[in-house]
Length: 355
Ligand SMILES: *Cc1c(COP(=O)(O)O)cnc(C)c1O
Image 1 (cartoon, helix red, strand yellow):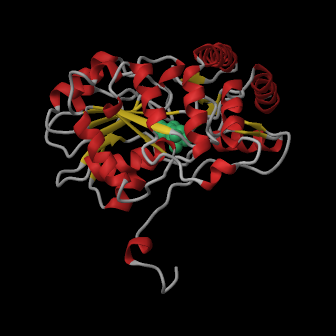
Image 2 (image 1 turned 90 degrees about the vertical axis):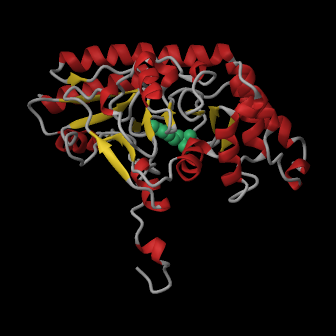
């Protein structure tokens, strides 16, 4: 605290990202990054943009990132005016909170979900009410009825990995015509169906994607949203009141190249899903209860061992997983899907730890 701090800053409780330790040789299974490199086309695009002397970096990037919007629009069969792009989906989400979710009535999101949501509410002064997941960590659409200022949830949910079927999302959209429903599909490419085809029928739907997970580009910082034009215009109004150039030149061309390499995308996500199924079986074999996952992580608890103690013992073996000291989930571990080798190392370490 400093006397120079504004009232706003005094009241903030910032999000705490998973650690990015500076140590080499870690098995890093704590922040849901993709274990595989991005498409080689991304590298070529970055090099092409840099050129021999980097002279293009003198010039501002396209403030509207039209090439990227066009690539997203092609990918999903929507109009470029139905696409918003931002510096990671966290930025897209932040703009959605201010542009579309800040109303008199509280917004709704699950009690167990992406912990950035309450942080944005704090930043923007948005009232919210958390809706408990069912005992088996499912979202019940019936719980999302009645007056509210908006609704947001990830699908698959984080950190549970559990998928909500599209019919259920449709029910939530239909029950809330007066509210914007934001579906944060950061992990949808690992086993879910995107809600983007519902955009044409639901003017209240905003679907948010990221290139950080399924496209192996967490370091490039690119996210986007798809929704009907009036929702996109609201996001543009916030963006153009905040930062005209959220995506730099490299991010724009790299993201376009990543979206265009469907073969690489499919190969990577299939590999992650196959490793996930093996890891789920191995964990179950060691007595873990694993929530069914459609994401690039699993959420598991061991009935006989304290989760924090397991995480600590793994850390001593240079394996990092995520443990949340939060109600209802403090006995769970969230484990990102690494390569087969990394997951095998995890399983071996758990064998030692569990004895
Ligand atoms: C990782 C993640 C994001 C943020 O992704 P970035 O595009 O890297 O900012 C958003 N939502 C959820 C649920 C995530 O897990």
